[in-house]
Length: 123
Image (cartoon, rainbow, N blue to C red; front, side, top):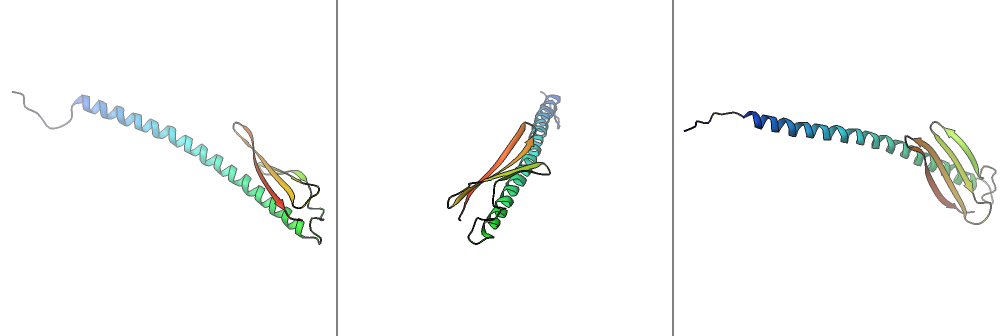
């Protein structure tokens, strides 16, 4: 008759180490992916905020004159570079409401990307 002794066998320890190694490798790969996603989200958020700010400036320029939309500032323009972002905007030459399109371009590892914001400004 064989007597059992308390503790782990060598095979059990090896299996536990392999499972632990696979888990750590998976976490390492996932953490680098999450870091890249956070960085990309930060730049995309900055681009969306820049586009929103430009659209608000155009709305203010449109309302600055009476009748509306006659300000020289309410016109197509750009590109304007601010940090890593490049803004350009187009304003429809006539109509009511006027279509406004703001494009903010930024660089990523995989090339250039753009955030586009479109709206109509009543004239």
